[in-house]
Image 1 (cartoon, rainbow, N blue to C red):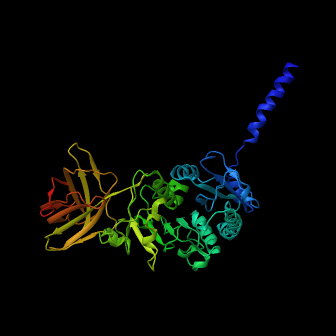
Image 2 (image 1 turned 90 degrees about the vertical axis):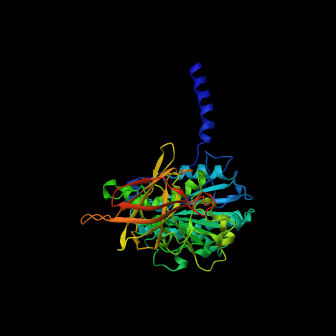
Image 3 (image 1 turned 180 degrees about the vertical axis):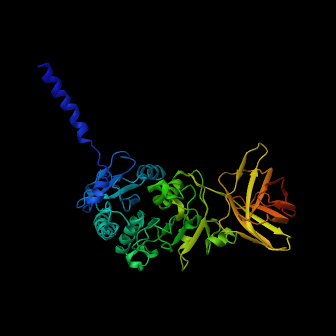
Length: 453
């Protein structure tokens, strides 16, 4: 009898726990990808009331949801192609950071069944079907009191185009779409109605991080951000020996840049410009057109510039450089150099800045060589992964990167260093420097004449 009582009590205590089992994102494997999967879409709702246990929305009865509050912003997160079947590694952070940033309805769109396949074309064909299913859900939300203005879709790779297809169905009246490295293959040559497009929402911001392989190269949004020119992201592997990470690292960097913007450790400032080369030459560091709000930032808070950007007839491309790890921010300086060599010199300048305590940080080398001509100013944008507020010393190193031939000498008549992130800081100058190739020259800069310092 005692054993029976214990058994019944155990059942009694277990049943409530069983009833609380939380729906989860579909977890598949490579075997599923090899055999292929039939499309199935589930929507998992998280709010601040249920941040750790999703509520699965019922397609034909969305308004019966316990947690959906149609008076609040509704954010959809849509993943892309899943060749191995596993849930996206970034999904947990995306959920946690979005909910901590704002009191929203967060909906994870799980179409892993349909995205998990080794046949990429099959996943592409499923995108239209996913968009149609999402429209059914959105229609019910609108009946339940939601507004198109409050709908925000974040799409990764193929998911960006799915968001675009949904936006098309509502004639571009969705509040916002963010495309995180929208997929390029099967979309690069397609007209606007077959991919994400600036007219798919009231505001469309896009981060392009892998334009030479998996991502879409041309502008797709109201504003298009190109970190490090849109390819070759710092910290990503450069050889095949790194395996799968070599192929997906650049592509996924767009997601991690977006996540970084939610952490708010620093704002990643960007610079609207015609090209990455013009940006690197320091031609686009004045954001007067965007005053009084200054330059746009990339990520979740990019829509602060919505009212300023929408009047532009052509897409705005914004460029910026990043460090190789989170939070990815760079502290930019414009180096202005005038040389007095009689013959032309072509090469690269590496900059190091130091404070009085011996802390030092080194710039990244420029991707394009500069051309130095006698008495002509050359502007070089250089960035540092850490900030040094008061620069006590700095160094310059000149290099042609030539493997053979005589070493070169660069004679500097005048050098000026200007903080881009903090333009109120004193400009620092130095006169009459001689740089021998590959030899670091350390010196103390002085405040420039006429700067009021």
